[in-house]
Length: 418
Ligand SMILES: O=C([O-])C(=O)C[C@H](O)[C@@H](O)C(=O)[O-]
Ligand SMILES: [Mg+2]
Image (cartoon, rainbow, N blue to C red; front, side):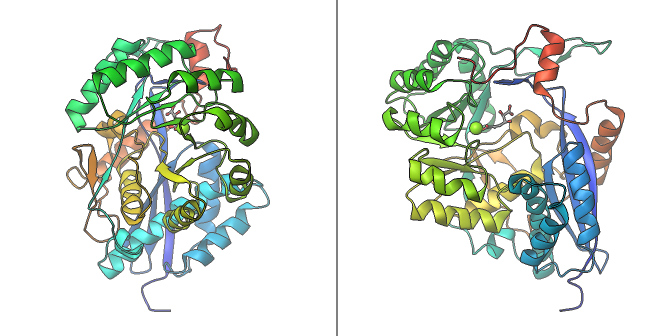
């Protein structure tokens, strides 16, 4: 082992940052979203690899376990690092998908550190880029005008406004286009009865002719309802995402749907690929390096998709700039990623913990950073602020349904609903 490549320590910083009241099939986003920021310090004490992952108490505990495992290991030995973390988690975390959230973020931090040591970008380490800029889709949400006053907390407004009907969604899409130049649009559905969401998609098609459109109700519909929506939106959607739960359910819908079906819900681990492919359940896989094992494994997943003729797109959750940089590097290195990727970044970027200017979303794209590693720099003061917000807040786990019930006690968290 070359001196200087050993890991000295892994520090985990839980953070919280502002999130608007975005509606989905299980409730509404709380005023704060949670992430964990990883800093992997090498033995020289100055090389630090960054990673970012969704937060929550379980994930935080698992990162603490990973932090006990990795010191002394070689930062280039990512296969052994993932195996060691996986083995340490196995007794308490039986789901390979759940273990994947931990190993993935650590792999990203390792790649960032490797890039800093070698002076090469992460996309170089992944085999080089096939595109200089990665296209992202505007991620549209039904939303309230602001968070309501609740339990002594004052109301919190934002500058996106209300979007509860087709006109509101079109207006939000215009704002997204104006602010970030997006050229494709994804609507988070599963909020209102399906015919209202069909109307919103039709309104988007009319306002933005020829632009790719997607609808994702997060399994809010039965097979029958999914078939109805698919028929109604024939020729309008680029793909329909997770209309109904389970691989067999999706397969039933796929048999008659005129457009491709996509998922980030029924195929979320390697063992799901075989049944999904055999049953013809999906035509597009929304990959996500945060749980598929990291950036190299995502590239391998892309090769599997290529072999079986599956399209490839990219899923996101509420996130900040380290995750956006990682998504951009891997998307730039995958030849068969031919649709725009999802990103929540516009909803959360005001509270980013990276130094401004290193990563920019404009013309609907993020230019691939060319600096060493991920090419982004941590802003220590912003990180400290976000950590303070986490410490001072009662929100320690994401709970969209619980929050919705506090605002609307009669809310029923039922899937599929229609
Ligand atoms: O494509 C998806 O399913 C997502 O983006 C998952 C997210 O949790 C989304 O539903 C959200 O932010 O409410
Ligand atoms: Mg989805």
